[in-house]
Amino acid sequence: MIIREHIPLKDLTTLRAGGTARYVIECRSESDVKEALLLAEREGLPFAVLGEGSNVLASDAGFPGVLLLMRIEGIEAKEEEDAVTLLAGAGVNWDAFVMEAASRGLWGIENLAGIPGTVGAAPVQNIGAYGMEIRDTLAYVDALDTRNGEVARIKREECGFGYRDSRFKHEPWLVILKVAFRLARTGEPRIGYADLAACKDRGEDLSTPALIGEVVRKVRSFKFPDLALCGTAGSFFKNPIVPSEKHMELAKRYGAVPSFPVEGGVKIPLAFILDRVLGLRGHVEGRVSLFGNQPLVLVANDDASAAEIDAFANAIAQRVLDETGIAIEREVRHFPLRDS
Image (cartoon, rainbow, N blue to C red; front, side, top):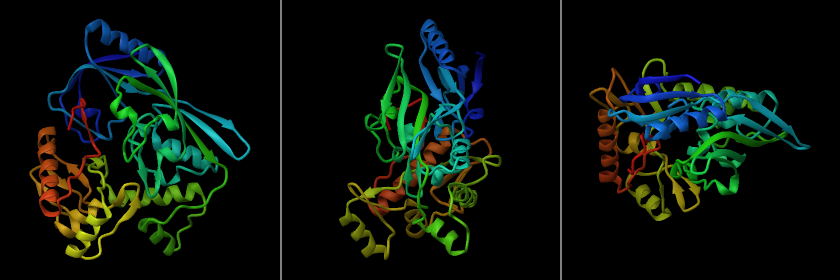
């Protein structure tokens, strides 16, 4: 176990912002996690867990505690008659895991290809794309309960999954060590979303999980900026879910407004509001902007501070509220966590 001190959070997050972390420890095993937690206890410091830092906005004030970088690797397979359960370490790169499943011809997570981050972070956010979410195939999570030092096996129905939400967002004392997914040996392509349907109409082969994954990555490469060129956390805001009456009201004001039926109402693509209603595609303020190819994506350039990013996002949210009456929520989480 390697302990590093005073490490810039901008080097550990894809938004490239934030102050320094007092201690940073790469945890490659359960024992590493426990040793890191013992250090935090001895020093009287808080602890926090980070994967690849692809969905957080780190504070300019930094983190005066022990940061556990989750790097537990390994993938195990349990064969069943009609399915395979893949158990992956929390530090496994998510897209590498999707490719591993596809190489085995397994169905259930192929539409989630190309999403940055780790397997351990995926359930926290209940990541989703193109009609699929983690909760569709997750079997269980093995998590260390730091209150008693025991590892608990948490089944899917106990995870409290919601739209980009789970109990792990609200119970930071649970440190995810491994995640298991039950994936089908046979399946049908789920390509109802416009981006994938358009690829099929152009003659692209979407007949296997591997081919679907390749197409999804190609689509994402156009809609999301290159992490090597700028700071971004991908989609910064959640798509709002509104009552059907609200959707009808918006349609009267702005014409046809795309929507998808979900529990509790209809989901409206925020990109439509940002682009077609507010004209904010490519909007720039200082060193922060909305990406020209996908206005749901916030881009930070030239060492933009977390405060600048925060102010920009707040201004965008206020403009949406003023124009439509919809209060949007962030998908990106603050680090360290705060109530907002």
